Amino acid sequence: MLKFIFSRLLQGILIIWGIVSLLFIIFYTLGDPVEYLVEEGADEQTKMNIRIKYGLDKPLGTQYLVYLNELSPIGMVDGNLAIKKPAMGLSFQSGRPVVDMIADRMEGTFILALAAMLFAALLGITLGVIAALRYGTRWDSLILSGSVLGISAPSFFMGVLIAWLFAVLWRDFTGLNATGYIFEENIFSEGRRLVFKNLFLPALALGIRPLAVFIQLTRSSMLDALKTDYVRTARAKGLSPRLVLFRHALRNALNPVLTSVTGWLASLLAGAFFIEYIFNWQGIGKLTIDALNTKDFPVIVGAAICIGCIFVIVSILTDILYALLDPRVKQD
Image (cartoon, rainbow, N blue to C red; front, side, top):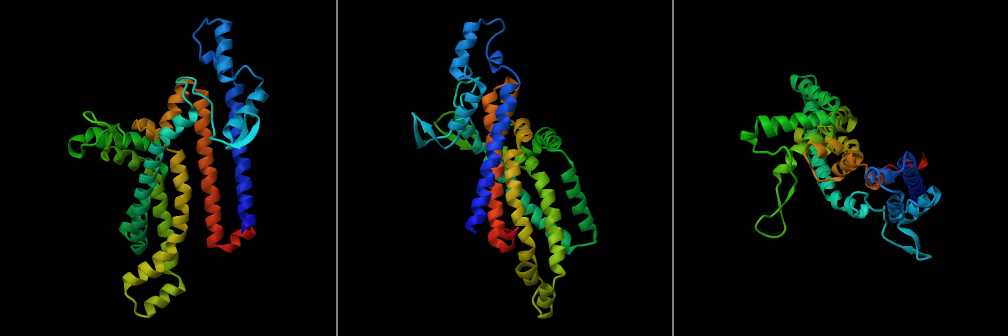
């Protein structure tokens, strides 16, 4: 087991290194970043001062090694190997450390992704079970058709449609806002207050696709579970339909659904770009799109690395979970 975990960790480190290297090459070899930081007609001395400030005066290979050293939690500090706080440079626009900017927005993205996942998992499993129990009926066809539509619709389209319906057309009934954040500053006192209604629409828009997947996955797993011998035996023993459903069929049918949740959570953490931008939600996605508009390369690279690390870490944890649940995985 330890050999399997070490192998997955090593693979993850190599993948993260590849992501960092690729992003560095793409964004720092397409052009001179200084040209985006100075006004038109700036003199060479001004450009040189900016290069020195951001370390862009060094050869590209040296910049790459310095960036890897700053990014690594274990690196050289004043000529000594030490454990340190990872760094991603300074923002070209605000001058703030990129790590601090991403950390400030991680809270919003995590809250949104978790809310969308809870909504998708709870409703998806419920509708999937109903569809399986009503197999071949009108309810089954209706739920299945809705799930197909949910998978097919692009996230940005659903975001715009949901914002228009609930926050514009039906605003008098819903009282919901098209934009907003879950925390708002208190006007007459210090601190922030929770505004849960601002979370509803972006979580709904972000959770539609995993909701559709969970419906189909639960339905398929339930249909297979209901045909197994242990379910037939439970029914033959005279157990109540509710006991057969929850103790025998659903318990085993949820295994593939629950393992799928981990992968979708990583996807939601990284895939909330358009939803955050549409609803003006203060998360990593909104930060990245704003950085793209202003050509703030350190923020773009830092956000992309953060998202890549999330995928790799969740993938490793999922593989380890599979190995714990099914020892045959370690033999692959």
